[in-house]
Length: 137
Image (cartoon, rainbow, N blue to C red):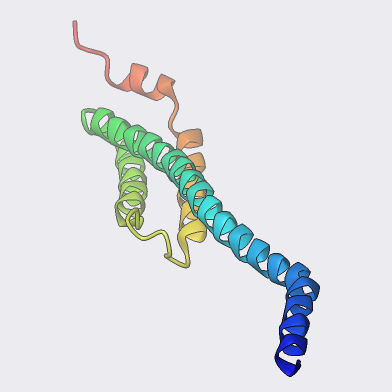
């Protein structure tokens, strides 16, 4: 009779504890699924954001290299100052840590490059190259 009573209490314990057990199992499944989705979404966001930054930096580098090349053909004191400034921008871009997304000063360095680019692009105008580098007739 004692065995029957213990079997009955185990059966009732399972019924009473079912809600708690299912809640725990559901939490574990939800946590695992959320972790997986979070990793996938984080990777996609990181790729997109990294590509945008890479494209922006590439644009700045293209600007600086193009103007550096154009201004080197026009020996002038003003142009030599512009070339030095462009060299500075190119140096900043070359030192930028593309491969290290955990670099703690990534945003700070990116802002410095943006500022330097804005400064240089406001000084260098397309009219400068037209008046300086006309081919002799």
